[in-house]
Length: 578
Image (cartoon, rainbow, N blue to C red; front, side, top):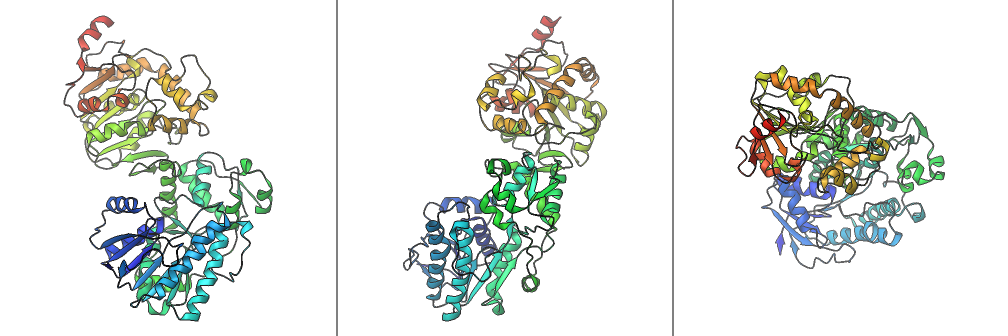
């Protein structure tokens, strides 16, 4: 039997896991009550957050059962937190009720039987508190089940003198939250948000995940919070149109100029609106009194971060994870209009991609390097916004915060920027590594081979694009395809190819004047055709993207360890070129 002072139901969920982490960090012993199969997910997440789990016990539960399937496995509980819920649109009514209503009642009644109980905190939605009562589940089982449960729990607690507190978070923003606002931001990023539902006064409040976890963890320490409900939201959240404009400015995309009444949006086909009908019930101009919540927060010593900063960080996470469809790259986001990944101040290596891939194409090389790196999406390509700056000026801005003297690595089109910076600022570069420098290779479009239009390429399946580029399918191609399908990216990619072709001789002449050490890497199937006096490493059995096919060999050259598994034949190339 585990002796614990706190138990968290739904401990592997978005709020539940952060609550577990907060309780452990503040010295509590915690039992995480999880559905079977969720244990590893919680442990991995806590480990990634560097949380000391010495005070953690994990047990399985089923809140659909009256005894929660816990038996006598837990002892000494003072504080019970219920973060268990099905948070999903499109739920069947019986499924939503079993967890969000019946399960909540089972947790409340189990808590009431604990001899050392100090408090039960039930976590529900910010729109749940109200008159409650029987709900019309035809309008959406998720919200209906939460609203009905709110009234029922408060009524049972009052009748039986159970020390219950309700926490009512609004749209909780933090890593891993892909619900509600995330879909609006993703549609904005993809160019699929021609108008906003609602009006100029629509209010979709947000709140920081860390604020929510610290507030909820502290509620049992405040005796006067029994029997009360606390809306958790940042009252400084701007109205929805202004919120989306703020996010659009950060992402460097166009914000929708119009709003449409929700009654009209409901009548339009979902393929046109990209709006979940159930989500429209959250589109409202209602405001919420947070004065009691603010008093408790001040006692606990917590406050909201600036809402603009919270929104920008959250939007970066949506872009990095493609709205939860892939694992986000750590330390990634926008600075200005440029998408950056990694260490921005003290990198040992700066990585610049080629066409049509993006900074994700360096993932395997970064793992091999095992050192601080900074990778950037080139202007107008990948996730970066178009820029009117010259290549040299863009590189100067990219490198402005850098305090080290890194190795700058460029692949294909990325070699243009690498050479420009090394020529202008040799004192700030330790070495250049140029991978498949296209200006010294056969001038051909590896995207098309037959001058396919940008509109065709942007609709090309990942497998087809990978085959044309001669690289394996995987995350790099998936990211490239996702980028090319965003408005304007395919067109800018082809424009960059044309500009590169017109400046081959110019950049080759600039390379000849670079004074820092330079190493060149090529694949045996994509050799140099122009002479060079720089050392050349040729990697066998690959083409224009050796960093994708042979990242270990590429990393060795980048580290300056030579090409132990590759073949050096710079002299042969120079001889044949002459």
